[in-house]
Image 1: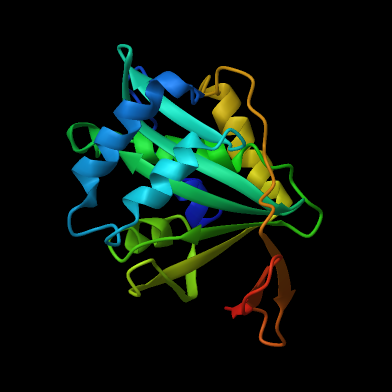
Image 2: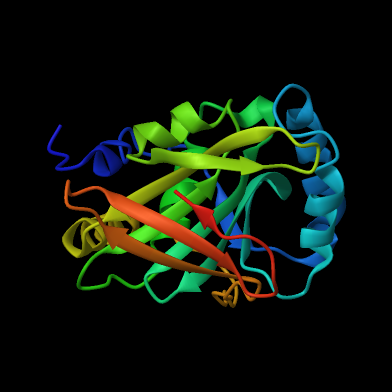
Length: 219
């Protein structure tokens, strides 16, 4: 009702299910793969399971799981591209628990891990067609397409969060007692760098550059 941005509007209604949010542990591997498989059909690119499996096996990642009565029911990752640029990845909730604000809470908890920057903080999402409308509700704008392993194109979304808005989101998280249990380390993506510029029209443009060769991606 009193939200100042579309992002803040998604803070309501609040999460009511008693969920424990904590740092991913190796013991969660099978449960996370099972949730991916339940959501895979008609949503994720063919062959992407191998990429997700490698992500889970990588020791250097910032990955959060949502647990209900000792059962993993959802998760989401985040990586830094720069001090004020982060990428959200693998935000997935098991079908039986979708629609209960768990996914929204995972979005906000991840956003809240990045320090507010004077010029605002930028968040990227390499989404799929089924999830992009959801992220647009948070204020993400589709800027370009990214190509998956099977050659299919999917939406790349960008969200700019002013420092005061990010501070308000963090304040709501604190008031609601939503936090991440465990020693969370915000890791930086090593193979991609990003630059974001504001155009004459006021919109933001993002340019991703592979650090180890390859072509630039413009959005």
